[in-house]
Length: 208
Image (cartoon, rainbow, N blue to C red; front, side, top):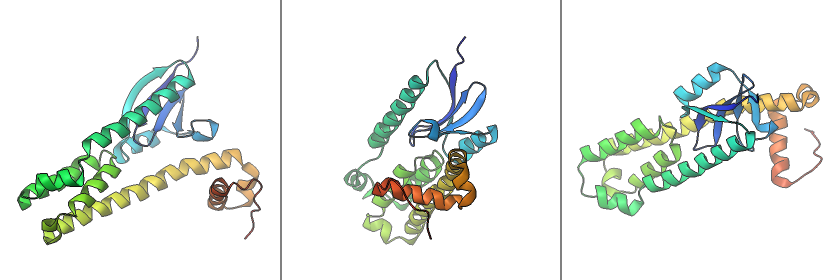
């Protein structure tokens, strides 16, 4: 009997997932091939759910292609949902231009309490920046400080999540390029590879 492949945690907005395959746990990210599939531990999943906007899931698939198609569909749906939920600057202006300070504070509170913990950082940042275009917000120190605090939280969230995700990229490079990983610092190898992808250089020289 063929072993099912399961998604046990998912970040649809970034197209990331934790899966169980043949009773082993893996972190899966684009391009969803061997290079994007890294062994992980249950603690990694717990951390992702608590800190980085992953939601627990229980989806089973008979084929890897089905699983990838599902993740891509979830990613597209999340992008569409975000587009519907985030109002335009004009809509915000019409909604809050005559609102009291307390109403705007509650609006900012919802961004802080709901969007950021849910990992919806793009929407949180976009809404906050649009709110900061309101003259009444810019002239109110309490509102301005609260808005800036949210933007700093968005920056900090991205920084921490990128650092967290980087450990899986490092594991991938150590697995794929054992000799190179021993000879050169792994961060340098990753950076060189990124430059290769951007410039299209086929045979880079790892020089100083």
